[in-house]
Amino acid sequence: MLSTPFFRHFNTNGLVHSIREHLLIYMFVMGKRRQREGPLKAILWIAGAMALDLQWVSVHAAGVRLESPWDALLPGLGVFGAAFLLSWGAELAQLEIPQALALSFLALIAVLPEYAVDIYFAWTAGKDPAYVHFALANMTGSNRLLIGLGWPVVILAYWWKTRKTRIVLEPSHSIEISALLLATIYSLVLPLKGSLSPVDSLFFIGIYAVYVLRASQAHVKEPELEGPTEFIGSWPVTWRRLATILLFCVAGYTIYIAAEPFAEGLLTTGRNFGIEEFILVQWLAPLASESPEFIVAVIFALRALPGLSFGTLVSSKVNQWTLLVGMLPLAFSFSLGGLGAMHLDPRQTEEVFLTSAQSLFAVAVIANFRFSLKEALILLVLFSTQLFFFSSVVRYAYAVAYFALALGIIVFSPGQRGGLRSLLQGMMYFLLMRKQK
Image (cartoon, rainbow, N blue to C red; front, side):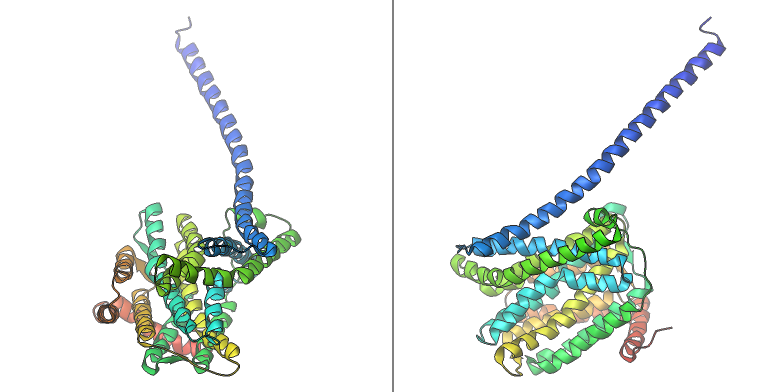
């Protein structure tokens, strides 16, 4: 009797019903677990970054005298933690202001630790000319690191997540790319005249001011937050804003008290271990201060938001290639007690020229508002291999290679050529403060 079709059908339905009930219970339990784990993970991230900051605040308040390499490591960890707090604060700012402006703000805030270290070197150079060497080393290193390592890492992360080999930028990014093109063209003047002066500051800071003003005219767009920012973003408006201010205050104070000991600690470490100070300042300091920014961009890429990810790093490049460069001679002049130019020696001239050449090639690559995996690998190989050569002849050869590749793209790629033509037109609109149609 139990083998009749009726009972077979009845038993099967009962089994399906039972399985369905168990699946619903499992999904409910797992959902509750994720709800619990989400805030917990966010709290752990915030607590970890705060701990990195507070360890240095405590050491500084206690007046403890540290030996090398701790005199560089502990303030460096403070700067590292502060960069995370600043990045989260800037992401939360997207809830209040237009996304284009928020991205420029995020880019500025994310590289604030880099600014603090470099401006310290420039300020000290007003009293000790030897520090001009370090200020320009840090500036050129941070700019080349951003394009040569940061841009490729983003598309590699996006490819690993989606297996897509190309990032397409929205037309709104023409503001950043036009500003980057204009600053790059002007930067080629610096190696020719052999100095970085307050006159150059007016030009570079002027580009940045127009860029921010143009970005502020964009429409407000609801951001996609995750992790700590999603956790804080879910709070009531008043508490969210207070938390955002707290993030900025803790990070800003940490950077203020850590910039000088971190910079000086790096120099001391170089001397003690026989490492060239120029190399430490040019590569290790920017890598430490900008790594949280890279992590934020990679997180965007892994969330399949390549536009936000790559757009953040393009904005960061505009920040560093305009405002940071423009601030150096001003800090130098204030320390000097009067207007003065930072004169470039042969090595500094070579570094600035190479940085300008890389920037021009990067603009040519993204002139069509696309960035491919192949182009990323070319940027990565050119950047990584140049680190092994210290000969001026070889490094000038790399600069020539960048120029040749940029010219090749313009000549043989109709898409990039048309994009560059549009960028040049956009640059004129950018300068005239008009909206491009």
